[in-house]
Image 1 (cartoon, rainbow, N blue to C red):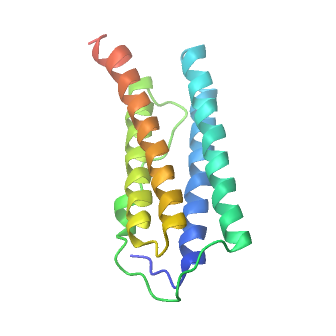
Image 2: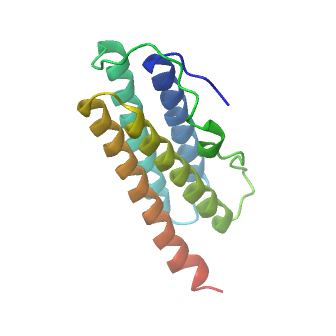
Length: 151
């Protein structure tokens, strides 16, 4: 498990995860079966870019007050999806992977909200968690409509 010494370590981790999500959705958009899903993946990539920008701004402006301490209880492995997007993924595999990534991101931001020492930072992380849960729901609906109904 990764130990964070301060809020900047946490923000760096979250920023890195957001960039991973941008790359992931950009890749899925390139391989999307339908125009609708290509647009959806592109929109999610833009949203993840906005998340990254928000976190970067928080870090750069230092709009948080957190004492320096070691944070050992985040269980980072719970928030990382090991599977990578592959060019030959089926549409079903891409949707499942997207759902898993969004669930992991939701759990991460929810946990960070619990650990945040002030309300403004808690609210930022809660907002990010909510956005990630909306993404997961969109993929669940897509999976239900286009994978489960075809089987």
